[in-house]
Image (tube, rainbow, N blue to C red; front, side):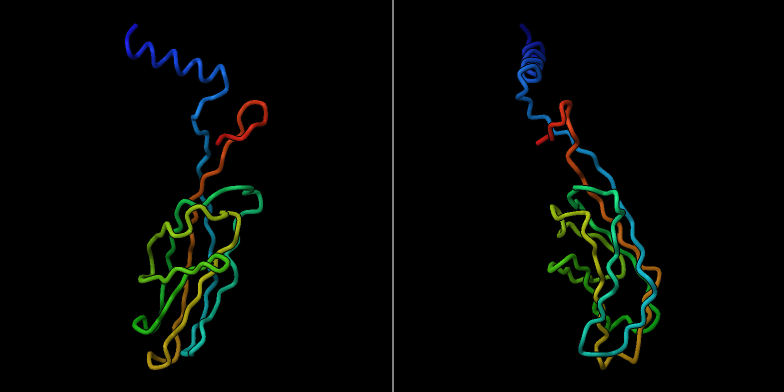
Length: 148
């Protein structure tokens, strides 16, 4: 028997016996918008309203989060972070992506935090903010079982 035939036979046997290690997963993404915000020079950060995922998302795990926003005013002294619950990631640019949220619940909201250092100017306006969350979720197998 050829090696390919043996592999095919092994796969059929595993599937028949229910011991297949194949992973069934569905991938997707959701996008949320950030309303326009005015950040004034302060020692305290301004936390945005939560950017909410769609209600129908269900159980899903984050794989990647991307962001983009425009800044009118001083960019030099602006500090930005993207947060989900207690985990916050410092943003070094007005657009980019991170995998730091990977494995976390994709159905949980995210928020931006902005701070304008006092010596940087009086205010900055944040507009056209967007967050895109890529996720995967386990698909159901026949019989209502979840893939592992």
